[in-house]
Image 1 (cartoon, rainbow, N blue to C red):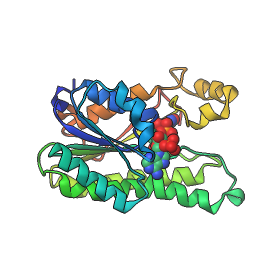
Image 2: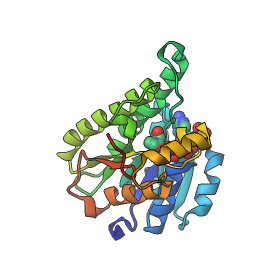
Image 3: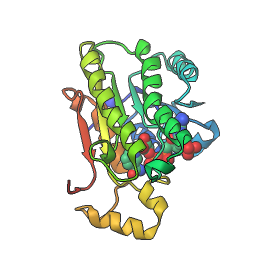
Image 4: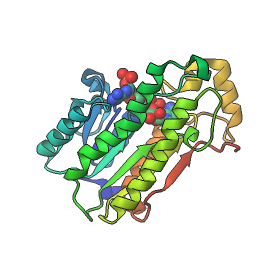
Length: 249
Ligand code: NAP
C-alpha cells in the first residue's frame, strides 16, 4: 500500500505532536520528503529525529498567520522543487465551556486556528500545486464535526465548518485534478485529547463508549491519511473518513 507516495513532497501543519507527528513518521517510511511545520519550530526536533528520511525541512508556521503561511509554502517549493500533498493537521482540541462562560478570546482562537488556519495554508499552497498530477489535501475534522456535543459549541462549529469547506474545495479543485478529503477522528490518545486531559475516569468512560473498547492511536489516523494521499485513493474526493473504533450515534 501507498508505494505511490515514494518521492512525493508533503507539507504537514501541527507536525510537532500527536497526529501530525505520527503522520510525518508514517509518510517518511513511505519515502516522502517532508516539510514539517508547527507554531514553534524547535518543537519539531523530536518529530524530525523520528522520521526515516533526511529529506526534511522544518519551519515555524502559525497557521492563523496568512503571510507566514505564504512564506513557508513558497520556501518549501523553492527547497524541494515541488509540492504534492498538504496535511492540514494543526488544531486546538476542545475545552468544555457553558455558553455564558465561553471566553471570546477562546472562540476567536479556535476559529483562527482550526478553521482559518486551514484556509490560510490551502490558499498559500494552491498556486504551487500542479494540476492533474495526483496532488491532494487532507484536512482534519473530528467526530465532533459530525455530531454535536454539549459544552463544545465552538470546537464543533470549527470542525463542522472544516467539512463544509473541504467538500466545497473538493468540487472546485476536482476539476483541476486536485483531491480534497477529510479525516474525522474519534477519541485518539494524543497529548491534548480532551478525554486524556480530563483524566483517567473520563478516559475509562470514553473507552466504554467505543465499540473496540479503547482509544485510538495517532498512528492509526496516520495510516488513513497516507492512504487518502496515495494513488489507491485516487477516486476519493470530498470524502469524510470516520476513524473512531465504532461509536454509537
Ligand atoms: P496535538 O497533539 O495538540 O497537536 C497539535 C499541534 O498543533 C501541536 O503541536 C500544537 O502546538 C500545534 N498548533 C497549535 N496551534 C497552532 C497554530 N496556530 N499553528 C500551527 N500549529 C499549531 O493535537 P492532536 O490531538 O494531534 O490533534 C491534531 C488535529 O486532530 C487537531 O486538528 C485536532 O482538533 C484533531 N482531532 C484530534 C482528536 C483527538 O482525539 N486527539 C480527535 C479529533 C480531531 P502547541 O502544542 O504548541 O499548541
